[in-house]
Amino acid sequence: MIISNFHVQHILKAYSQQLSVRSRVSKDKLGKSANQNDEVTFSQEGKKMAVVNKISQGIMNQFENGSERNETSREILDRLSQEYGRPLDVVSDENQNLSFKVLGENEGETEQSLSPSENEALKKRLIDITKTVVNDHLI
Image (cartoon, rainbow, N blue to C red; front, side, top):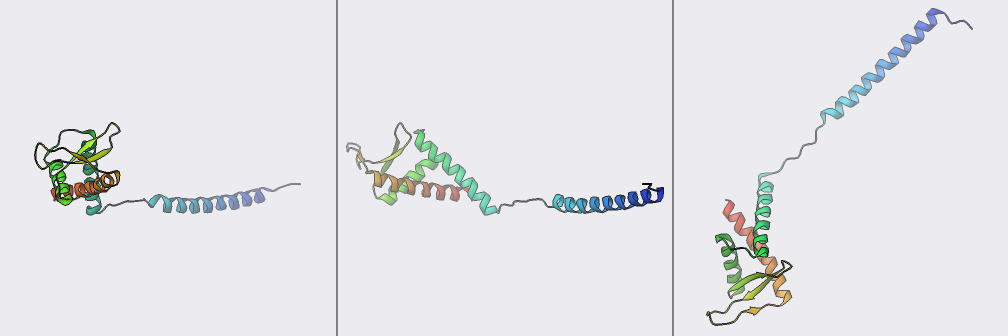
């Protein structure tokens, strides 16, 4: 079988046209997906809440580590004591679990330990008060 130059040129021309169409289509698909950038924006309130949560976690770690209390941590503990109705102190055990003790009104009185259920409720309230105080101080 003999193939003339005309047929070869015609086949090559058709093949190159198909290639150019395919490459344009693939460029269009690639261009559309390349132009679509994912973008995440945080609201000012979201940013503020992230900062409040981070600072609150740091303060809670200070309570758990038993480190010296600063003005903010004393304010938080005072608010919790006012809500509870009696002066409270926070102590941390060797596992860094918080437990609360009721302080005596006078210096000679002994401390009272609280039940585990009361400790859990006070710990949750301590976290809430911490976030509130930090949020108030950020304004």
